[in-house]
Each structure stands twice: as structure tokens, then as C-alpha cells.
Length: 237
Ligand code: 5RP
Image 1 (cartoon, rainbow, N blue to C red):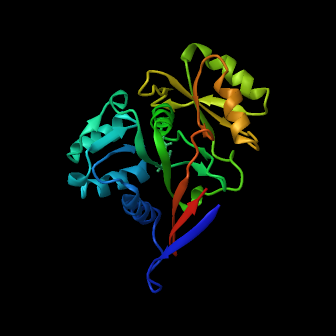
Image 2: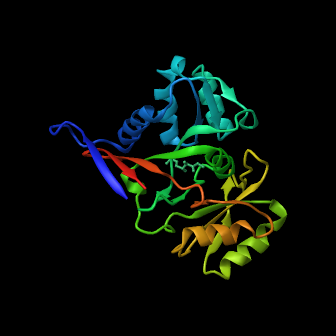
């Protein structure tokens, strides 16, 4: 991993988490290729990026979106949203993360959009992660790992995670299982040791009923723009 920092002005008061997100959302604009379609993730940090993207919307063709929520925000900003099937290759995908390690491996899916996020990341040449500094970890696994599952496989998948030392719980919204944009459930798993993200992702991805596991090692980030109180740190992997 290499890194550089664009410093904030020295006398400035410490930035709030919301301001750090705004800062990296803006910084991500320099990775947007003029005249092209940009891949757009999901979450509160990405919302800041979408707001920044709206200011240069005339310089891009449009976006491929990773969730219904981002599509709505992009369209409200006047940005054309393309079907991912209509766009074979994207130069860049910009998205947040729940955790990122020193190799660019991530845990994602806190916003339940992990499946479409992985799809758009897979069709992109470069993944630029935008996050505040609290997301940088030495080892993945502290944040409950989101896994999108087919509902009829939920209990068996929870048992498979238990055999690995993890405790899985169906994510609820208003007392009912949360249903993703793809009509499936999310299981959040705590207590896991993810020491080899690539091997972990490969293994869990082939369990019957797993739609997507929230470890992004095959689709890891090449760049991370990390919002810190002393400025935006650029990590390259
Ligand atoms: C959504 C995601 C988000 O990128 C992740 O949860 C980070 O979100 P935020 O920027 O709100 O902290 O993976 O499925």
C-alpha cells in the first residue's frame, strides 16, 4: 500500500464525520473520466459523491447504479442512469465500504446493496473506495458481515457460519426481515476471523443459497480516498 495526503488548512476545526464524507465525495470527482459512464455505489458517503457529481453532470454520459436508492438520487440530480447490461465496461466504480484493510479488501453491504455493488464493481476497471478514517482496519471482521441469501436457505447458512465460529442473524426492518432490491434476505454475521479474505470469499460464495457475501476481495479497491481530520489520504493498493 502507498499513500499520500492532501492536507486541510492547519487552523481548521476538526471535521465531523459528515464533513469527512463530503470531503471524500468531492475528492472522488478527479477519478471520473469525462465523457464516460461512471459506476456509482450506495450509502451515505456515496450520496455525497452523487451530490458532487451533479455539479459536473454535463461532463459525463451518465451512471450505472448499484441500488434503487442511488438510482433515485442520481435521477433526481438529472444524471442519466444506464442499465448495467447496456454498458460492457466502466472505467471506474466509486463506492463506500464498512471496512477496508491495507490490501484494499473490503467488507460491504451495510446498506444491503452488496449484490448489485459487486456486479457493478466486476464490470469496472478500477474500484475507488471513499470512506472516513474509521473504516480502515488491520483485519476484516469487526463489522458484522452482511450476506445476501435466498430466504429458504437462511437457517442452514446460519448453521454453516456457526460451524466457523460466527453468529448469524437475519437483518430486520420494522420487525420483519429486510427484503433487498433483489427480493432476498440479509444475514449479518458477527464473531468471524477473516484472515484470508480471498479464500473466505471463494468458500462462502459457493454455499448453496448464498447470493453474495459482503467480503470484496476479488473485487477489491485499487484506490481508497480516506477522509481524515488532517485531509484526504489517498491509499493505492
Ligand atoms: C451499502 C454499502 C456501503 O458502501 C457501506 O455500507 C458504507 O456505507 P456508508 O457510506 O453509509 O458508511 O456497502 O451496501
